Image (cartoon, rainbow, N blue to C red; front, side, top):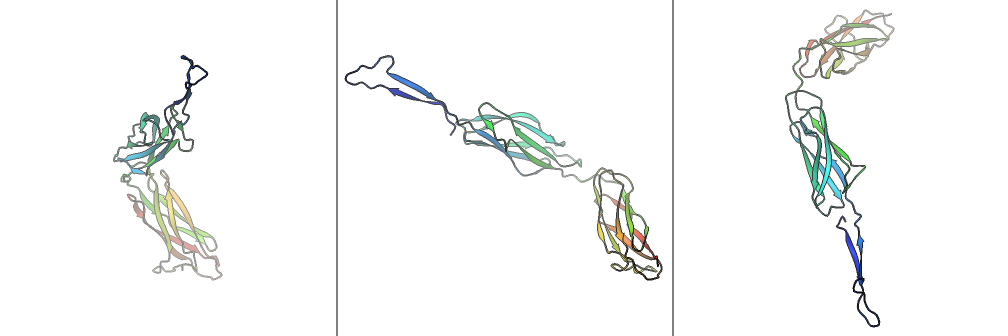
Length: 259
């Protein structure tokens, strides 16, 4: 228990056969309390920009009186957090909630965070395991409209090898773009290739990092010993990231017969 310093006093009692000194009949020894509160901090749940991030500071053992604790606030990103050093007062109950305001805006940006770190003090120690805590700040703005469009190139490949699936963005954008692709047979073609017989029935996602304009994958072509004409299948694009258009969502893939 964190408490005030105390003392122990011994006083000689009067008795027969001796006299008690009038100046040294009692003596006092001070007793210093050595229980210094240890401060730890924990973070609340992630918040959306414009909401308040919460942290809880705890003193153990509880202080004998209100305790002033120095903390430093920092942020990652640009969410209007008031950064710098401030003082949090922990009451004798031993726990205090700290709230940090964030500001919302209309700008699409990466998620950020706010961190609170407990500084060293004279009247307390700081937990080494719980010296700082971080709350994630989630951006809630959609990507800006873009004129960028996706296109898939026609391609060809020889039996036993593969055909490249190449998708391009018409211009670089400042955010991640994803698009799904699916290899499928086109039975309306003159010489349709059959899935799982002539080529590997495959699908997947292509992900463009911010600034990238071209991504590729491949479809394996099965080999056979039949003498046949060249065959075709298609690769279809779908489900692009919001704000991205489709200039050409269908690629014609030709299998070159080698028998």
